[in-house]
Amino acid sequence: MRHAWNPGQYLKFGGHRLRPAIDLLARVDVARIDEQGPETVFDLGCGPGNSTRLLAERWPKAGITGVDGSAGMLEQAAKDLPGLNWVEADLNTWTPGEGADVLFSNAALHWLDDHAVLFPRLLAHLKPGGVLAVQMPGNYAAPSHMLIKEAMGPWRNKIEPVMRPDPVGELSLYYDALSPVASHLDIWETIYMQALEGENAAAEWLKGSALKPLLDVLDEEEAEAFFAAYSELTRKAYPKRPDGKTLYPFRRVFVVAKK
Ligand SMILES: C[S@@+](CC[C@H](N)C(=O)[O-])C[C@H]1O[C@@H](n2cnc3c(N)ncnc32)[C@H](O)[C@@H]1O
Image 1 (cartoon, helix red, strand yellow):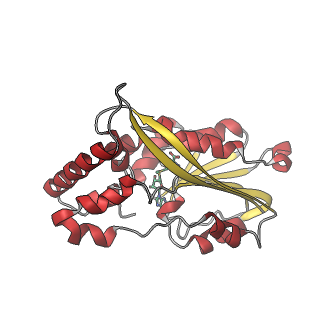
Image 2 (cartoon, rainbow, N blue to C red):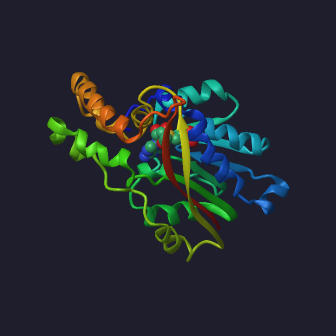
């Protein structure tokens, strides 16, 4: 993988980042599978293992595997949860081998392109009755994303080529891609009103996710200057409240498909 993900920066807002995973898991109805317990459960883009821990708690008898492209994230995950399986792989080409009962993915598949092909491909790897459950941020229209363009300034030539068009489609894209092959579909979106703690909270949030690939193409001095310019803009767009918190509304897209 091109970007060395930083578990420390990502976990800074661990609680807010995990809440949608909990909401997603609550909608995974594997009643048929639950009777025997699902045998094979994968966490795609498991990162430092926070979402994988939820899966292990829900299905303690299942074989649970976290898959991620970042060795640093997996190292952290294996340290915290030594009893689970961890696989380093690029999800663009990864397959589970034998059919899986559950493919779960929290805040990862937006790093992959062409969802109209990707989602049915993943569903095809499930056993009949198995479930694909995915949550992805859908926040490209928010000021925090728009302001990246404004902050690019003299570094535009380096940053623009690594900026991706919005990878998350309309909800109807997921319906159209999956309805011919899924036996049941549940698709929705939620805006979380996140009250973040700390200084420069909105920019710090983005630093652990969407800004990461952009900061990576700049040298240290440039990255610092770009982040300072971006922070100034986001502080205005997301001012600290009198109680010291920063409100950062965040839209997320959910897809649960049963084979
Ligand atoms: C935002 S983290 C999500 C971590 C975890 N699922 C959670 O809920 O906290 C996204 C993860 O996706 C991984 N990732 C992104 N693109 C990937 C790819 N093409 N193949 C494998 N992993 C990828 C990153 O390494 C990162 O650990």
